[in-house]
Image 1: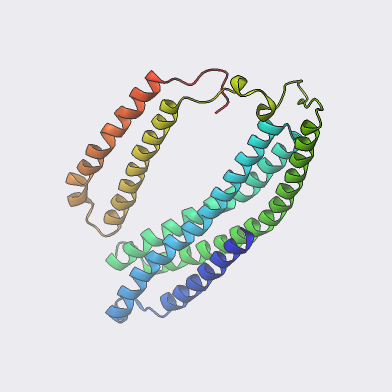
Image 2: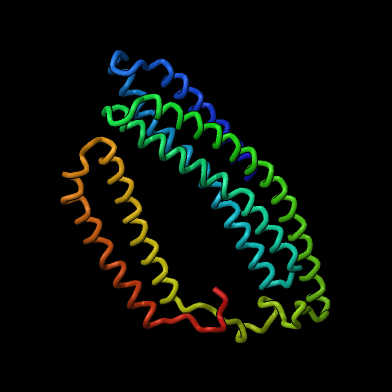
Length: 263
């Protein structure tokens, strides 16, 4: 995963540098219209790529953190690994969030500068700040990914030792005296109802639709077309999301999560 992310980082930094240089060549209204359009369309794509690259950081540490939590519950590994993975997230997330916010602001202000709502200097200043934050976030994420990868390798070794001890017939128990979940008999394992999981999926899809609506709304606002979009633009999102919200509420009421299930 480290080398995949490194490739994404290098590609994104290359595009950011290219569009920063291209933006510096623009001189307001005296610039070539074709160059302005190329910068605006390409800049939007670069913003999307940059947000995607930072999202990899969130997904990676969220996924590995969940894996550590599951290894603790299923195999009884030491609790210090949970503290370690939380520490990684607390170091990587804040700077990545700032970089994402600055990147999105750069894209919005780019449209505003094109329409004359804000001076181009504001857009350029925010873009430089966004690139600086992105470089810092990538440096932090790459360093922590290396440390996290080493931690996951050690955890896999600890799980292998626990499984070998269980195969020999040794009793495995956590610090509280409980037997890890995957070492219990199958009929003792508590699972979340399928209807509850489906309700979570419906709720996530419905919320995602309104996040997409907010993105389009801000794009139209930056281009000075928010009035015409605001009058009718929300209707398709409401028509699609309303059944999803209703399905989520119905499924959750019919399939509640038992109190003894850790979800």
